[in-house]
Image 1 (cartoon, helix red, strand yellow):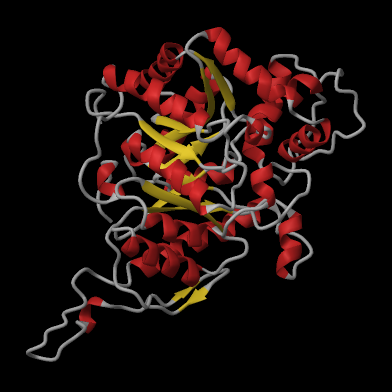
Image 2 (cartoon, one colour):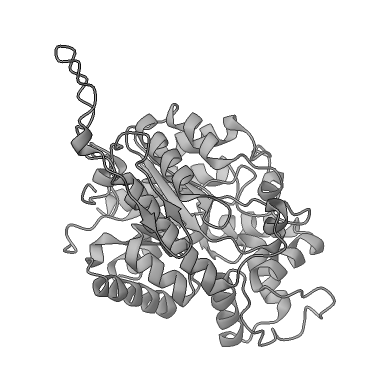
Length: 431
């Protein structure tokens, strides 16, 4: 894909209470994540801004000291079913873990949603990273990291295989002949692997996209290999331009080794944008949000992201050289490398993670944010961005009403949706 053909892609990370842990405290902000009205409003704003993807993350464990939207949240596939009726063009993505699901159920659910939405759904493949979640599924602990990815790799292959058990045009429904199904266009899968045995076929006809899109966000070697092989969209945790460029080039190169094209994967770094008409106004908004962060909440978030309990450590001491753990290696590696490179204290890291849970924070005027996005896009550090508004709807309105028009004026972002399925809108070939 040439530079002239490339178009920036934008996704929104939908958390009803805002992506900042204290975002819900802003005047007029929504204060519920388990609210269809809140999610409907976010999706409507995203469609007004011509966003490519509305994204719902998920966790199957509850933590009392975690982000507010993680304490009460909808099951995401049910929510997407409702949102598919309330939206027209935007893609709808949701997380489902391979650690606590079965390939047949996942293949069937996403195929159903793809039909309901006229071809607009995407599956975010995760392996789960919390032993607390395992306790909700009659297990004492998760499998170790690399085994989880081995299971995930086979899991995805089975799901994609099930989607392919139906060819297009299998349902004939010929009233004259009485033939309803062309049996030659439906086949069994008969998968027998290391972790799964699935006969098939799927009991629903081929969906509009053939294959709903696959999203992945693993930053470990195993996670990157899975992304390079199967992902259409990759979410990236990033803080540094050089690290972003290295990740971008590495993942695209790995995709080539799997027989894919560079354009088969779109890489979207996560970024919390805090927009003001002036730099001072933007900083004032950030400072107000930061003033509401409680030590208990922030320390819990830092411990979760690093995979190490920092309770009791001096916040003014340098960040220790913690080893990587089994949990969220992409986040912990990025944050630890940043902390050591910038000689950060735990308090510095505390402030960073409290703002955006470890993601990049970009605070400034619409022109400034557009300048940074344009540089990252044209330098091929990113194919677009996962926007994490600090609060809804005001923090998201700021981006849609002020930054999006500037990106459009520069010819970096579309002014309207293309026709077709999500896969076609993004320029991917139909599966």
